[in-house]
Amino acid sequence: MASFASGSLHVIGGGLAGSALATSMAEDGFTVTLYDAAEPFESRWTRGMHTAPESYKTAEPEIFYDPMKLVADFFAGYPEVPNKLIRPAHCVMGLKRGRRKPAIVSLDPGISRALISRRVGVVARAYTALILWQQRYASEENRLESTLSPGTFEADEKAYQSGTYHRDALTVLAEVLFSMPAHRCSKALLGRVLVPRLRQIMARHPEPVFSAIDPIILNDIALPTLRERFLAAGGVIKGQTKLGDIDSTSDYATDLLFEDDSQVVLKPDDAVVLAMHPKPLCDAVPDIGISPAPAHRRCMAFEMRKPFAEPRALFVSDDIVRAIYCNRRHLQVSLNNSLQLQDADSADQFAALVWQRCVWLCDQYLNLDLQPRAVNAENASHPNHLFIDAEAPFPEMTPGMAATCQQLRAPWKNVFLCGDLFARDQPPGPAALFSSLQDTRHALQEFFA
Image 1 (cartoon, rainbow, N blue to C red):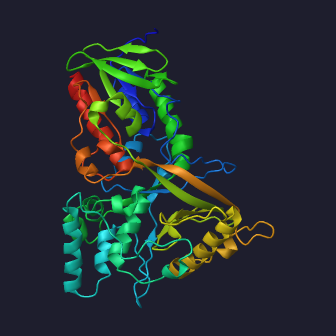
Image 2: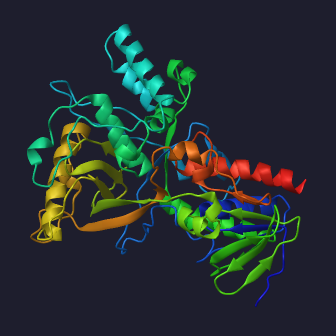
Image 3: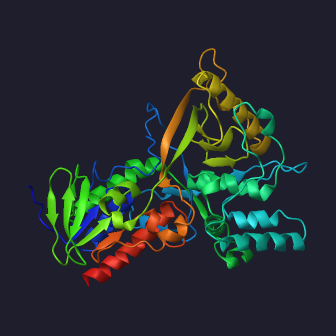
């Protein structure tokens, strides 16, 4: 049985969380070994979508909640990474509401201010603020609901019926921002995003709480930069090492076992960080007790001739479309979870239907004419398209999951958990990941002190 030289810190998982933590700890002067089942510093965070134009998949801008600017502050320490990795989220949310005009809401200053300011009169605004604030402290068992009944592929007449603006807006946000069906999202989770702080609602010039991240810079610049900095700081990389189990005979983990029959014998002052997806994490440490249920996202990406200047998104309540991302030379469409695809539907027929709906929605809500931007194939009524059925990066939150995550602890004193699942008071996403990284670094420094 092979044996690795024991080091001070072992980081299991070479995704964004593990790579960023290992690099930071190595630069802090610790001896760090980074293990991964594939290759460390490989991006598996941008929904598994490759950035190459010839690929079957394409990258989309990631809109995330980060009022504390955790992601931007981390990469500020890396001058090699362009500042435009993090950009303002120029996005709108459009929903029909009876005879009123479509609701156009900017995400930059936060959803709560926009929802409140749209109300007419002091009483209506105060009532809206109170409702949003109550949701922040709602029970984790209290799920989101929509006034629009679930539609089907054929029930096109339901697509434009009016609904209550707030409730429909929340269901769309839950599905798009958190990569989970709305009924799995708690009102408390979304409430923490909608109303981060009371003073931000009252502020005259609030700080942006939503941002957009450039996946191409993350994949092609940020992660290779992390790798170079990690190696320059003396870090050791062990690829193709899938964690099999963790053994212990006391309050401390004593062995790391890998599926290739490799073993790491841990010294009493060694520490282990698990920065893994919940499924392999539960296989290695069943005592943690996470029951993962990975979400899937179905998307249709259209190739555009004329690029968009800034990433924009349209959130809609629709039988077919849930969200539209305008990103560079791509238009990426997040499909409605309730959409039932028929086996007899050809890819071209389905693409034509989705494209027709996107043209109508962008014209209605964004005042954007897509036709001049499109490059249609010969005899096709829609641009070149790619159908994407990818696993979303964040597990769905079962009832009470958000509350449970706050209390999860590794069963041994020298084992720590790092990733977006383990951050306090954060919705899943990159901001939660870097919040967890910050907490883990502090815990490790106390352990090694």
